[in-house]
Image (cartoon, rainbow, N blue to C red; front, side, top):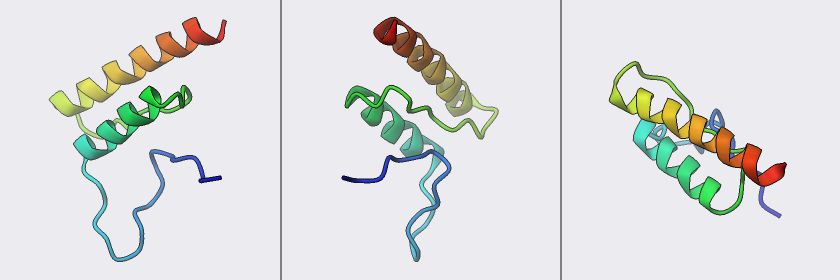
Length: 68
C-alpha cells in the first residue's frame, strides 16, 4: 500500500522540488481519487496562492458534505 502523499513531503533525492502549480495539481488529483483529507500547500501571495486557498476551501466543503 503506497504511503499517503503529504503536501510538505520532500521531493525524492536528486530532483528539484515541485512547483506550486505542480503541488496544486497533485492535490487536485488526489482529491479526485477520493483522498478527502488532501489539501494544497499555500506558499505564495499571488494568484496561485489564492487558487490554493480556494482549492482548500472547496476540499473542506466537499469533505464536510461527504463525511457527514
